[in-house]
Length: 295
Image (cartoon, rainbow, N blue to C red; front, top):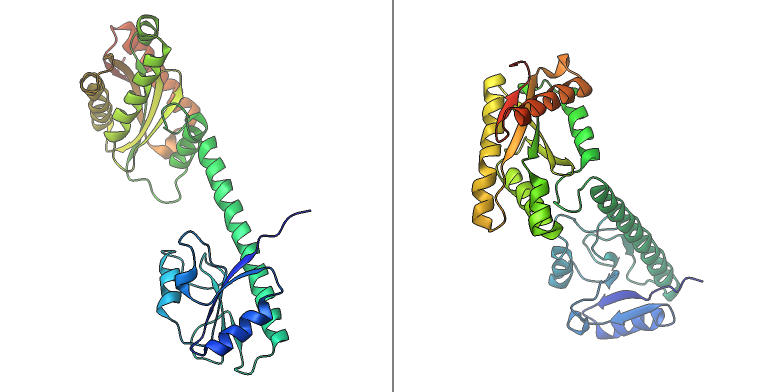
């Protein structure tokens, strides 16, 4: 059987006798009760405020602790039972509220608060799991699954595309030698550094992903073929320079790219063209960029 955690309730009233009366009415329930904000531990998550005052600095302080979420049941801030006073409240009760009415209102609100918090926790967990499913654990870059989603969205944009789509594949030259000479731990450091170097050199609209092994994919909106090659060359040229500054073994990269209008291209055709260009770059001496259609 699930053990229900006590709800945290703050009771605020100018009349100490009223506050004590409300606390006495709630004392038999599963509540931790406070009559002053000063009594509450800093790490306590407050569930409910019972008050006969207009919004107090204490209430505002608790709400301010949840930026971007206004008050009320749909947010992460406490629910409010306001008794005989003006001001916002999730439940409004008359000044002569009975013990039974107060208990029922508090039970209802604390249960709703718990359910809403569980739903938010589940949503956060689902989002975290989705991020992990789309992230390469070694480099922190998006993975192949995320790449396929990003490519599909760029080939079928909801709005007119801002230009032509450049798809590039970068492959580290002689990366196996890094692992053989320095060990796979150093090889992993190189991959992480390369991912960071490429990521830092991109525009906000660009997309980079680790496709597998030492292969990195890049998607960028460009004006034409020449600007596509320029983007890829700029990214590729940064790699050995930045790696040397980071103290890892310096490696170069070969790249193949293809530039096309999104409406006239398919994911498979774009990737195949860029991959063929990458093979030419390897065959022609590595540390260079080859572009589809220039053979």
